[in-house]
Image (cartoon, rainbow, N blue to C red; front, side, top):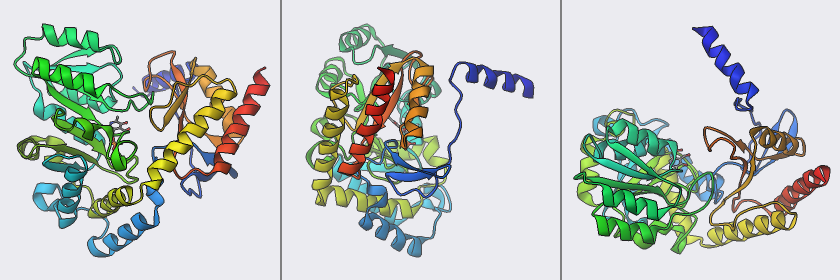
Length: 384
Ligand SMILES: Cc1ncc(COP(=O)(O)O)c(C=O)c1O
């Protein structure tokens, strides 16, 4: 059996699809060292730099002293603390929903949502570029899955029109994590209403990035969206997933979501740091402004150099290179120049759509952006 796995790994290497872990040392948010070299990081999803914000760190330190490091059990057994309740109240208000529930990870939240609200005989209609956790949740639910081409809402409407199932679930991301573009929530809200569907929006990459005080674009449509999902692992800077919805839906999830019932809770220290992160977002709007200034700056500079980037709609700026080999070569070249930008390849993105996924943070300085620009300029000059 072992040789079968080895053969498969060799195949991956041949196709430039093999992944290996690179250990970054002396990690300082936007900087780290790798094999003795200093690196500037334009990877990761810490869009506001909150993973190291002094207020967030102070909240975490205090929480460790108070609660320790673990959660001790699943939420319904011994894992729910006042820190969970406080965070859930904050998230519900932030997302303008009646109630919220936190999970130990965003992936688990999506598995929970889809397996609880869909089942045999139901139909899930989803965007082709939905995240793996939504796809796996849909598969696990036993419902029939119908996929519409990315953001093709005419096709989506056709699927809804044809669907005779009692329960139709319409599923999208708000910001698509590997492309950085945004769903048309207004159109999806219209379709949901017209066809009586249940609308689920994954706001993992939107939370903290858009809207008034970074509350995410979903809040503009919070009345039309039945379930708003998000993670605490991206702009919130920590770890964990959340679901915001009406009280009854949250009650239903609490009773039936297996990734909630049978997994150890999010540790209270992460609840307290996430709570403080939400407070920082609300009280320091300059952070979201800085993020957007940085996004525009990176976009403008790389576009001027001749790299083809779509108009920025989020903090994710992919440079699509197509060929997996090309993407890996570009990654290695940038790494040699001291810039870490991951090459995203199949199966994370479709075959032949490999890319460098640049992510921008409010924590990047002007000097960091100049460093990025200088490295891309060098690559460009080598090519021409
Ligand atoms: C769109 C989307 N949804 C869900 C998740 C899962 O969230 P977590 O990393 O908190 O498990 C991710 C993480 O990559 C994501 O990009």
